[in-house]
Image 1 (cartoon, each protein chain N blue to C red):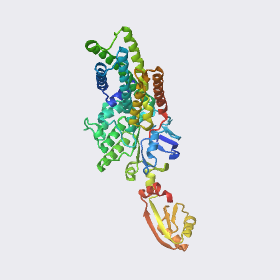
Image 2 (image 1 turned 90 degrees about the vertical axis):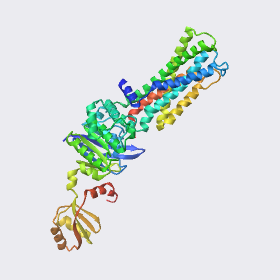
Image 3 (image 1 turned 120 degrees about the horizontal axis):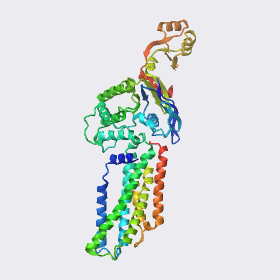
Amino acid sequence: MTTILRTWDLTKVYDEKEIVRSVNMEIQQGEIYGFLGPNGAGKTTVMKMITNLVKPTAGEIEFFGDKMTHRSYEMLKRMGSIIEYPVFYDKLSARENLALHGEYMGYYDVQAMEEALELVKLSAVDKKPVKQFSLGMKQRLGIARAVMTKPELLILDEPINGLDPLGIKELREVFRMLSREYGMTLLISSHILGEIEQIADTIGVIREGVLVEQLAMDTIRNQNTQYIELITGECTKAVYILEHKLGLTNYKVLDPRTIRIYDDIPQLELSKAMAEADVELESMSKKHHSLEDHFVELMGGAHNA
Amino acid sequence: MLKLIRLELRKNKFNFLKSVLIADLAILGFMILIAFTSLNEGEFSSYTDLFDGVFVFVKAIYIIFASVLLSKLVIDEYKNNTITVLFMYPVPRKMLLTAKLIIVFVFTFLSIFLSDIVISSILTGVDYFMSDVIEGTVSQELILTHLVKAGTDALYAAGMGLIPLYFGMRRKSVPATIVTAIFIVMLISSGFGSFRMGNLIGVSLSLALVGAGIAYLSIRNIEHQDVA
């Protein structure tokens, strides 16, 4: 797979405050990259830097192997995007807006325009000005505008905001189709895990401007999902056994009484070893660590980790 | 560049002709009122006075007009956030902004120059056929001097018309843009008797240069600005 976009230590400072700090992102061609983080974590700023709206304070962005500078206008032809919320020339109709977009992008094609409207189920819009559109309709029109020019990289900032559940489901299908059938690479940000989880191939988690994790979904699904929780009064001793007798390394001491073991080990073997060493166990149970727990931990709970 | 200008106009659906017509009719009506009725107490006794009067009004109206255009073309794009869409196009920001400023400059220049000529001609006609309040004759020489004056005046005014850009851009504020224009108009129209600040070449020329400088700086800086 080719890397379509890569950032090197991307940093943005506003008023002496680091909004984005040393972000190293890597997006592979053809994948859906879910960009996850709470509100105000720096998602939009990163996206603005990628689309050349905001100039990085430090670091670099590489798009198709070319370094981006403030003069990289040609690169913008290969991107489609909605940043923050979709904005249009309010007094113009949907089609006028799209036509204008096509002219500026150097891609004027009525056919492509109709296809894009079809894709987001807006073909029926008439001449009414965009001002009168609902947020959901604007969101769809924004997506139509972004995909109209068949960009290689599609950047969508919170695209499901303002949509009803049915609309969200439809859009999810649209995103999948764009990725699978048109081979587009999608960078989708959201603060809603459930949404990202369902469509993303890779997830990048950003918190307070720092990219805390970047992993393929498959890896995340296999990782950290199951563990054995031990509760014991003799924690230090138990840890000693885990490490030296059983040779386990992937465990975590949550508090002086609780240990989580992520390594794959039969419960019987574990209890035997503990019994042999006279470690009294209050309880031992196999638990499921959901993806959500994982992200909540990453996004918010990292303060006490 | 021409294409960019055309797109800008399409985007805003301007109806220049209609607005200009209304403004010119208002100026004409006002001029007829003060020049040919008893309100005129010797203020407009010669053609030079009359034409200068027209110039002052026309300039005042169209400098404010220019600021309204600036608000629509530049400030509103920032306020409505459509600038984020515009600056994501594969077109250098410099060219996008230049296209907008060219529209404002050319519009201001043309409308002042043409309005000067048209309104002055109509007033001369009214005077000739109806009242003959104005003394002297319309000589070829007189016409020529005033044509040149209208041209240079319009050029200066078009330059001044760009000054509000600076104040409007600082806070992305439409009121600031228009208020600046009104201040400029007050400055150049102030004076006593037939003396007007704006008639001092030095004042007009330097204000016009300030406007040009502001336009240049805005265009130069725009590449490196963040669009927050």
